[in-house]
Length: 282
Image: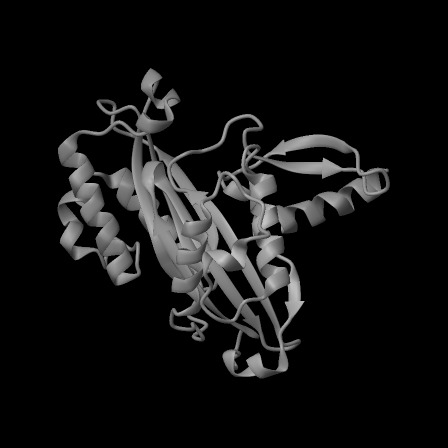
């Protein structure tokens, strides 16, 4: 059973974190697929919501087998999961029995105890219907969801299907990937740690959230106040985030407009440089 369990957990990770089913594209859709060095191209749209949540829809076109994959998911850029609120299900392949719930490293809708089944339902639906045009609410009549708004799904999908196709591989590729790094503060007057979460979408930094998490701060237990910062620091960090996205770099050498933030926070500067190195090495 141990061997079969390992196989199942690998399958669960792929299904839950990617949340897609592969379907064959119709022959008249071949024009949607653009040759690329990656073997696939894509359209994607991400919406930044409250409390660090980002919802996204992707349509991925695979070159080799002429398939189209539809992916809907949500990612949180502030909240690091604790316990099994977000988890990977470890099941026995033969019996289907859940053996263990392995805590997820990231907070996503597809690994959420509350949303996981609905996200699976949404992705199954879109991969079965394989829409290649704008849709209306009437197209979602048979979709059984209560937590995610159908009106929102229609709007997000339509913006995605009409978005520009991405076919440039870039220097580093993730499509998409939620990642984070932390670094403990060396400032004795500011105990805590710096946290940076970011989404890499098709080789580009799509979104980034920089937070300072105070040490032993009871307020961090509250989701809405997970990061407690002064108004001035929050404003400076927001400027820094915008510059990182604009320049597509976390290197302190490239972020000249944010010198005032970086030079006064050597820990943050070092953390961002390490992220830049990691991205280039992917």
